[in-house]
Image (cartoon, rainbow, N blue to C red):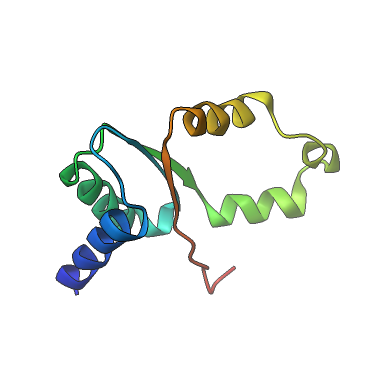
Length: 105
């Protein structure tokens, strides 16, 4: 199975995203998919990627936030979060979002 996932990661990076030598890659992934995200990072570095930046999320904590946090936290996006994505986009970074759902939540 690991070989197939490595091949899939390589396909995503080289064909799907067409990552170029010297380009930065931002990977957004739930922590539950860490092993696959790491395979994608390896494939990106193999393709000549300058830097891979991981943007982790946690389904459990995200769910808890929606269920228990004060409603006001959803009114605005923090400025640092907006600047994070905008500044990398202006530098020509590639973005990969890995999505998976936890059947327990």
